[in-house]
Image (cartoon, rainbow, N blue to C red; front, side, top):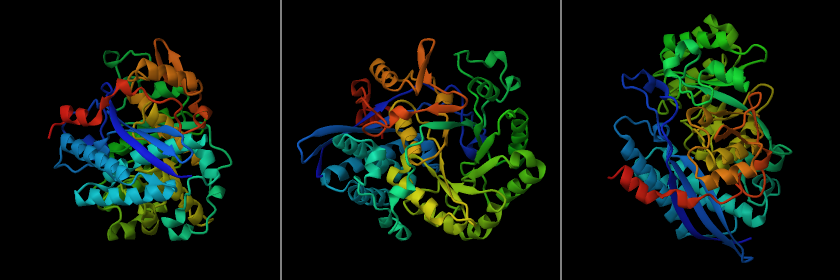
Length: 485
């Protein structure tokens, strides 16, 4: 099949301030008050035709999360967002300058390489460039799936995307990728509930005067009791004493009628290897019960230290105590391969880092796993919100065969309240397994800590109806109004 890209447009949907304040990693130690952050969502719309004379739209979306993508302190939020938007617009130019293709994978790889090179030339973080590339990657793939009248999973199983992981990693040249995929997508997924550094744990942390009273759970104990969550992702600050004290409190309120499972996320908070090693050793020594329920620790070190020679000497020893995975350090197609050589166990899937990249990392996990070596592909969140970011990421997690994923958008935001009435009506009609109405608003449907999402694996990539573009703002107009240069 031959394809031609007809047009590419970008739109932004604003959201309300978050229900709770949040901060990432060592930023939580700042004297500045934490943000009740807004979550502007950038949407891509592509129109693609094929040589059979058919035409389809494709879409994608992600939160413009520059606080996570680029943590350099000498650049304010406005500059980071302008830089990110500039890369997104450059990605559009790259796709439209070469609009014809027959291999979706080869086409994406060429465009991705050019976008990454442009990002480095303009002094952007690799994560920022990956975000821009991934936005168009998913929209293109969505349209290609629609033109074939197939789901993303079926396109991969039937090799209709021409995915060749051996072009990314030589070890995978002979792999049959269909054998790496699950027999069918996972359609019931455990929610790994984010426990932010400032999130209230119990009523003691959240007196009546602070209560939002919006009908949703507010404290961690509320979520455990009302939604039955048993998987948790706990944010760390890098302050060893403070983190251990908070973890001790967490252990007291963990549900014991089921086996709880936790992951820890430092978001680059530990300034050096000795501080991090001290944290892990003290954690095991002082809180063995909770320590044994931790699956892995995510991105403990700053990205510029994570792959250093010092890390290569220390990480293998620390990883003997608890598996370690990368996230912010995973900016390139080869980052996970490099991390394995340093001594890390795994990496994270996030759609904003690239879908083909996560597929290749899944193949690496399968290739290197044996009885003596654990390898991990986790599923983490970028505050995915309805409709497009949330649904496409749930679809990806199911395709990757993962049975739990971090989810925090339903905690920090108020259901589908940011959507137009048309988008709400379409999403809730198409996906009754995913959403439920409580009072006057629609919310993510969580039962016994799990979300059912079989309806996401129809034609396309997790989204049925074309988004309500008229309810959004053009990206160029939005950035000029909100962050004029």
